[in-house]
Length: 172
Image 1 (tube, rainbow, N blue to C red):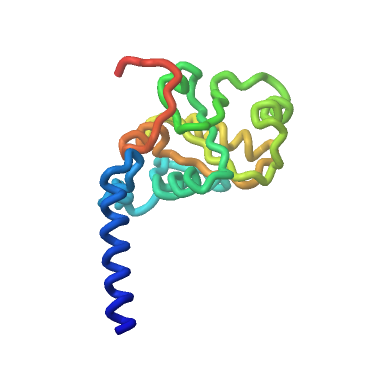
Image 2 (tube, rainbow, N blue to C red):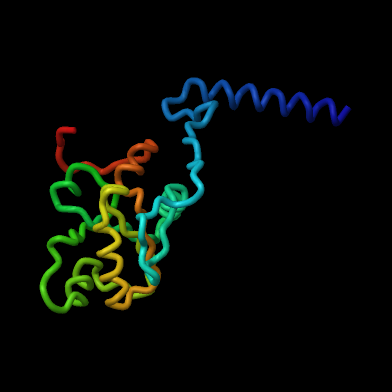
């Protein structure tokens, strides 16, 4: 008899729960909206990376680190491209506008004095853009130790339907 009552309570609870979910404005979807994971053999890489370059990460690794928080994403593109669309929360450090001379004070001001062992992923437009590699090398030379390069960049991020932060509307 106790098992039968437990079964009835379970069924009634499920019906009430599903019913309430149907009428709520903030309902939980029945089927999740998940993207297909990257099926490549590894991260997008330039044709000739140099020995000692920071490692390259896949779209899946970049998204995992983005969702986990604690990773600083750095956009190496020009400010206009950054404003048109970037990975949300990214720091803009345009490689083409790095100051002459000592870079340590400049990087410290960009990052707000974070520890040099903080996780940083550098990216730019995509596989036709090597600004991320050059900026990552500069960061490495200044002592940042936990660097990675997302060579697929903003273009791959957007192609996979991941959120973009846009400060201005730009033409295609």
